[in-house]
Image (cartoon, rainbow over all chains, first blue to last red):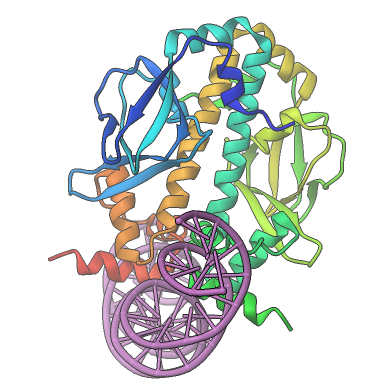
Length: 176
Length: 176
DNA sequence: CAAGCCACATGATAGCTATCATGTTGGAAT
DNA sequence: ATTCCAACATGATAGCTATCATGTGGCTTG
């Protein structure tokens, strides 16, 4: 029942863009004409403040839709840069909007996608608001009900906002 | 341009529910028939794992829609409890769905609401993944471009996942 | 106007984690 | 089978923050 936007996009006219690592997909202020979905690699959306400080808004992995809110804006409010070599699918925004308006199934899939992203992002934020690695792992497990698979722990550590070492230690502590 | 779902709901049949602090609005496993919006007070959604560990999925303040993903599920996957005395508006899910299907404006408002929530939650998660209070405040400022108003610092501290004292110190440090 | 409360403020200390260093191991590739 | 690499593992240390304590000032309330 997990809707994959990539599949739905196969119904729409689209182009593939190839980006070298470090290349910009768009800049803040650019006019929005297109919706993007990451196919391979990864794209990071960053907002830069006046003071030079910056804030990551999204780390888009394969399958992720970029800047969902851009569907309803006229210009981008952030920069998009390829962290590594990447490919993205580009769908004209007008086609995307028309599809939402004319296909109830597509509109439903879009709403489900957004709801899911909200749920995931909120969970992550709540986990990260916990203070110790032990608490964060507990909370993560409340959502998964099983210890993470070996080979992926480093990734989980990043998801938990901690260092791999700290996670190794916490897991080791639980083997008794 | 900020869509307030509460306003849109005035178009739909709805009831007001009054909850005492500590009361459950729904339990995991309950059949979903209704969409809720918090009017006053606050409602927390919590998922409990087998091991006894728990994860907060959402802290809904006035104006927040509860468990947006429940629009497409048959039963709840979490518990909803009133942190304090609260009132919520209840809209039959069938009416909500029909409104989305029949009113393009409503569907658009719903999609905008979801996009906004995604953006906010992702930003918060990225801020919380930073290690020091200084970095978190910088990131927060990149989004706001101004120091927080006095009288709200405690709230900001919670948003930054830190203690009020730590935030006071960091702000004090910047007054030079 | 006095009392009370709450946010702001700052010092001291303990505790947890990031980081660096240094192995160990298991699987992939040749 | 040997090499190579990345994940897993664990020790030591420095640094940052949570927490407790204690104080100050402004605003509300009676």
